[in-house]
Length: 201
Ligand code: ATP
Ligand code: MG
Image (cartoon, rainbow, N blue to C red; front, side, top):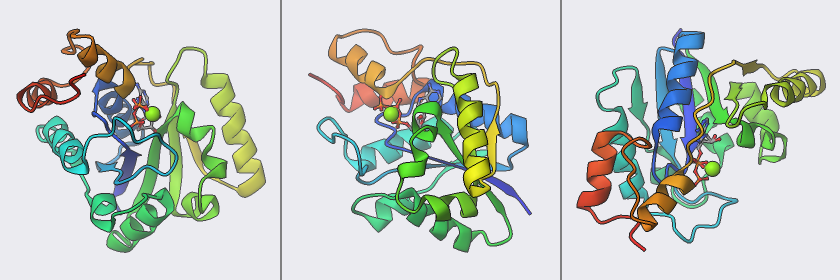
């Protein structure tokens, strides 16, 4: 049995905060692999400044290509339409029937996950892993995990992974303002963004 982390997101673009969470959980739980799964169309997000899926997928590939324990899955992009985590986890569970799935997310996602389409099935298919995006969130996350465990028997992992306060919004804003992004994203992603003239105002 392998332990597979599944990390969904728009990744518009992927940044160091994403990689930090994935590495943190890989190390904390001994995950054999973390799969980054870029969404096709996010169900609850303003898609105004969303880059095409192919660009977001490319950047995920570039960010993970030198990390042997990390890979990118195009299941949501191939499926097309709105991307629901429940469909993705079902598909991955069929692909990896002998493995245990761990769904990784930041605090913002974890605190709303009960409202997601097919939450019951999500929680039966994968163990849930989250960490703070801002200092001081840990108690709220622990309390929320406790509630989900009591109410649904959900398996939650709340690890005290140091906060790395970066968001894709911050990267897009920096680019729009002509600011440097080299501390926010891997070099290969920065090069790709510049070379393709992405996120220009
Ligand atoms: P945006 O600002 O466009 O919403 P984002 O940085 O939040 O971008 P998403 O693609 O929306 O990135 O998020 C994908 C997943 O990564 C979510 O579960 C989110 O909570 C998590 N995440 C994003 N940034 C961080 C971070 N710095 N630390 C921990 N988790 C993060
Ligand atoms: Mg977000």
